[in-house]
Length: 148
Ligand code: HEC
Ligand code: HEC
Image 1 (spheres, rainbow, N blue to C red):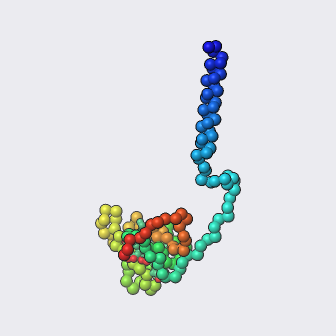
Image 2: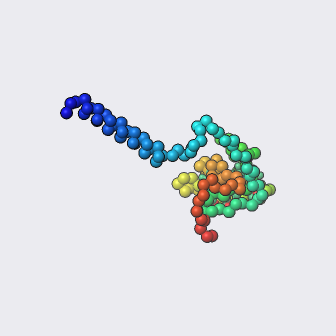
Image 3: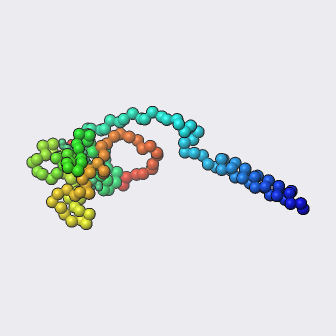
């Protein structure tokens, strides 16, 4: 066999193999974006109203931080102050709005030791407590809460 046809047939095999792979890949993979062009954008969904009706959406699992049944934008939380504490501290008589007191867990350090002040780890309340909106899950879920 002359070397030229050998090299040529080897090359042909490689090219055919690559082409086959590319075809298979294009059939098997579909981008999450679908057929949408990359620069295409959609307008953002409208902002939802927070439910501010003093009724809490029920908790769905044990140890879930309750949702906040009132607005929160006015209550600053930063290094120096925490407006939430004005109502949610354990100070009988002080809170005219008669809001719910934070539980004991908010007055413990990470080793479970009791503190006489709210734990630093709980300073940023909205890390765990978010205002409630009537929003359906973006993706379906068959999660069921345990019966109480
Ligand atoms: C002016 C007083 C006041 C301030 C400030 C305040 N809250 Fe409240 N909060 C209440 C009252 C009163 C309730 C009880 C429900 C109601 O009457 O709206 C409540 C309820 C809650 C609940 C639900 C508790 C439960 O067991 O259902 C959470 C969580 C909460 N607040 C978190 C916060 C967070 C976080 C902040 C700061 C961003 C904050 N609150 C600031 C008065 C206040
Ligand atoms: C690390 C998460 C976390 C942070 C931060 C946090 N909480 Fe909570 N909170 C919880 C969980 C979990 C519960 C429910 C279990 C419990 O009561 O301990 C709860 C319960 C509560 C309740 C309801 C208590 C009751 O008896 O119904 C109030 C009120 C509350 N938190 C207020 C606050 C405030 C105000 C802050 C900020 C100073 C805060 N929380 C920070 C996790 C957190």
